[in-house]
Structures are given as structure tokens and as C-alpha cells.
Length: 255
Ligand SMILES: Nc1nc2c(c(=O)[nH]1)N[C@H]1C(S)=C(S)[C@@H](COP(=O)(O)O)O[C@H]1N2
Ligand SMILES: [Mo]
Image 1 (tube, helix red, strand yellow):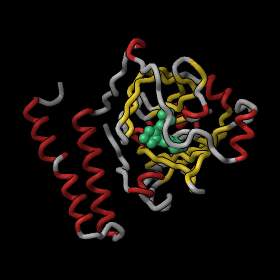
Image 2 (tube, protein in one colour):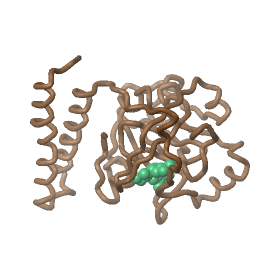
Image 3 (cartoon, protein in one colour):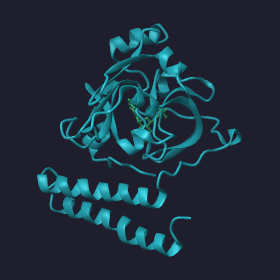
Image 4 (spheres, rainbow, N blue to C red):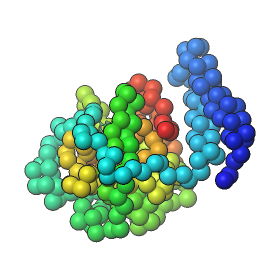
């Protein structure tokens, strides 16, 4: 055991409680675009992230039994990218697909689906929590993201991993990002299987991210390219993800 209950209570009350205060203070003054507030937002999110690490360390998200799997796992968000290149790949059952891993890596690489499926895999039964208020338990099979990053290597200045997706909302492609701790977490996988079957298109075929200690919108579907970056500033509006930029969802989104 790492912390006594007293210490845990203290940390939770003292630190987790502090982060929303910083945020609402920013909103009250309507300064959301100013640099100072971006710094404040950054540090409060950093704080929430560090507190989760402090309390849970590299803890695993809960895993469930087969009997606990949801009979229906609904889809959400986009269920079929409009992109014609994606649709051409889908028609060939993704035979011509390859995943690009580039940016601040030592060796930019392309991985075919066959190569990815030949790598060591992980299967996990986890609960997906959507911020809109629904959850579902499903079984995911895929390659640990850490195995791909082992192959490409990361440059010293890499701090985040960005997922570029095939689908869009009104012409803006979906994207998400996670930090390197989440990227190397053992339950962070690029899933190609769901519930003992190939990942359906509606759930993000051919590859979708599972980053199990974070909310549903972080679980990027239709991942075409992974990019290692030093900063999220030049990605979209700079908040690290499609919904973060569009409607201000939290970037870290820990659960
Ligand atoms: N590319 C992409 N990824 C996405 C979305 C999306 O619309 N496009 N929606 C997100 C949201 S809000 C949720 S809750 C989950 C839904 O995953 P599911 O369709 O497998 O249930 O995917 C997330 N990842
Ligand atoms: Mo969601």
C-alpha cells in the first residue's frame, strides 16, 4: 500500500479540489483565449494528471469477466468516415491499409495491418465511459502502442502522441492526443478486435485507440496516422483534441 487513507483523503480534498477552481476562475473573467489563461488551464490539467498518477500510479483500469460484457455496445460519434480513400480501403477489407507513425520518432514507419496483427497482442475487457452519460463493457484486442513506439523510437523532445483519424465533422478531421505516460501504459492498445471479432467499422476499423483510464472521446477511432510531437500548440486550436477544441472538453479526461 502506498498511501494511508488519511493521506489519500488529504490529497484528494486539497489538490483535486483546487483544479476546478482555477478553471472556473478563468471562465468567469472570459479570458479563455489569453495566453495567461492557457497557462493556467495547462497547469490545472497538469495538476489533475499528476494527482491521478500520485493516487493511482501506473494502476490498471478495472478489467471485467466475460459474463459482465454488455450485450449491446452502442456506437457514438462518426460511424463511417466520408473520406473516399478510407471507403476504398474499407471495400477491400483494409487489405491496402497501413498506419503511419512519424513526427518526433527516430525511424518513421508504416505498419500494414498484417504486421500489426503479427505483433504481440493484448486483450482486455474494460468499461467505456462516454461523457454524454452512457457506459458499456467490451472486450478489446490489439497491439500495445508501446510496442509500435519501441520500433520507431522517440526523439528526446517528444512529449505527446497525436492520433489522426479518417473521419471528420463538417470538414474538420477528428484527432486526439495523449501524453507519453498514457502512451506507454500497458492497457493502451490500438485495437483491431472487439468482442472476439474483427473491429466493426462503426467502432473504428481498422484500428482504434483504447486508453482505458480516460473518457470515451479519447478513444480515437479510424486511426490512420500517429504523430509524436513536442507540444500540442499547433494541433487544431491547441487544446489537444477535436472535442477539446470544439467545445472545451478536458484534455486529460481521467476517470
Ligand atoms: N475518429 C473518431 N473517434 C471517436 C469519435 C468520433 O466521432 N470519431 N467519437 C468518440 C466518442 S465521443 C466516443 S464515446 C467513442 C465511441 O466509441 P464507439 O463508437 O466504439 O462506441 O469514440 C470516440 N472516438
Ligand atoms: Mo463520447
